Image (cartoon, rainbow, N blue to C red):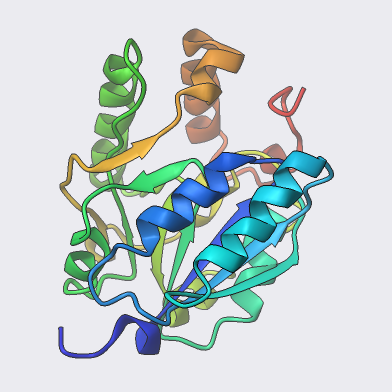
Length: 237
């Protein structure tokens, strides 16, 4: 890929009270090969002083390597939608603030495939990698089932394709990532093989492994029921 990433990619990160996570996430982004000057939109609704300080420090420390912009966010779907409306590049990457891209070649390598939607498998905290191993297999299986599941923590979209399937719906507050990604044709969806993308296991720690897998199955069964995704199902409690 000879084109500079800043000319073809915008990164969008929803955030709320992420403290040091947002700093570390941006730090790893800044090490991606060819990332210099790429626009990063942080859709933030932090109300904790510590998190606001980390956000400010992030803007200061990485302003010479990335084009960082902070806008108003909301629930993840709202933050992602707000950021996508500002995107003018051919591709956009939705990233969660607790996702760390630890290999500097991940993003530039993925850009070579030119798929409508791409995601990655995750590694996580000690004791929970077996859970994510199953979770990652579900992402692969979803392609075979014809309802692609790209976890919202890492969704690399062709901007045109994103808007063709409607973009994020700010009324959806649960499993909005699956609600959107399942609309992509399987042949245009890809799970990029890597073992260098880390995410926190906090979702499984907070809600429990069994609860998370149950609600994942419910999301699949309700994939054609738009009303299902507008309810929180206790996820934000």
